[in-house]
Amino acid sequence: MVKKYILAGCLLTSIFTSCSNEKEVNPFLISQGNVGKLNTDTQLKDLDSVFSGDSIVKKAVENGFSKSNEVTIYDKEGNELLLLDPVKEFDSTSTIGNIQIKDKRFKTGKGLGLESTFKDISTNYKISRIENTLRTAVIFLDEINTYVTIDKEYIKGDARYNTDIPIEPSQIPDEAKIKHFWIGWK
Image (cartoon, rainbow, N blue to C red):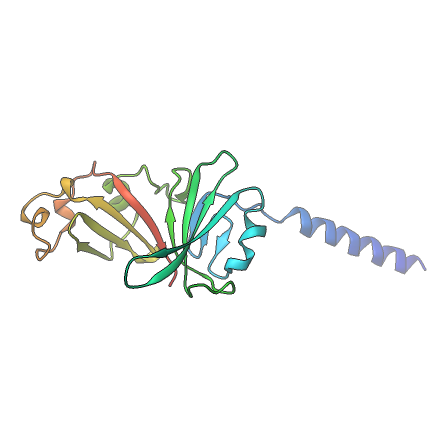
């Protein structure tokens, strides 16, 4: 009989210890496969429980050639946090394909966020590639499934005016600010 009480006590102690060791998720940390409370397995139908204290706005967007459904997450104060784009359009079981970071509180473990500069990028991450678009330089950081844009007003040389010329990291000044910040899970 004493053995049963000891066994029950050990079991309860184990349960309480494991529950207290669970780490609370930082709601603004961007890491490999996670953006705050979201992860690569989060389905659209789960958003109501993941963001139970926040507002979720779902809307269909038509751009002339195709339709898509975007989901915007707002906090309790009405600040826009995230813009989500599902992998499969109009499917509640779809996971999230792309996330646009809209709030400056979201940051990587190395401090990269919307208020960061090119120096923060080049110091802390390996740049996978840079694409030259009409108005921005798109910088890909494959190690964290991220791409950021920098306005071409910062770009030095002819690549600023010609999308056919590749942009080299040396053409982007350290103080160039991030314009948009995306996580790509597709």
